[in-house]
Length: 161
Image (tube, rainbow, N blue to C red):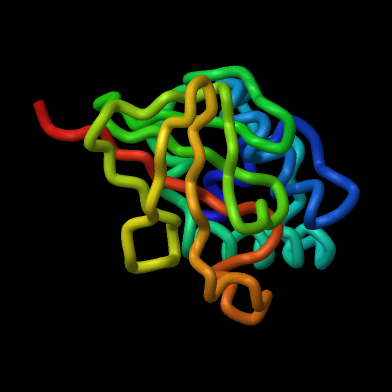
């Protein structure tokens, strides 16, 4: 999976963190090359390290980048994708957002279920005027409890119609 998604990057990034950042940016903007393999050298140990780093992240968060479409422009450290059926929106936060995720770019439908990929429980959320506020798990204050590194995905599923 990591190889398939990492090849979506248009150029070879300088660091493994940049590789993940570029992958998220490219997919959330709908930029995927027709022939992305031209930038890859699978035997390169540095690129292999990038693949392993991205693969570890994808083991938790792949659904936010697989079979999705761009949905909203980025807002600060947040990027967004939407599932093919349109029921699920993914908010991808670059870096740990702290106690709350606060965004004006997205307004979930009433009754939506919010979760964080890699965390089993639903997260409380509310719409405060123009701002959607999602509470992050209190256990995540300790970095050791984070389900992944660098970017964290919040899954917002609209209620069934």
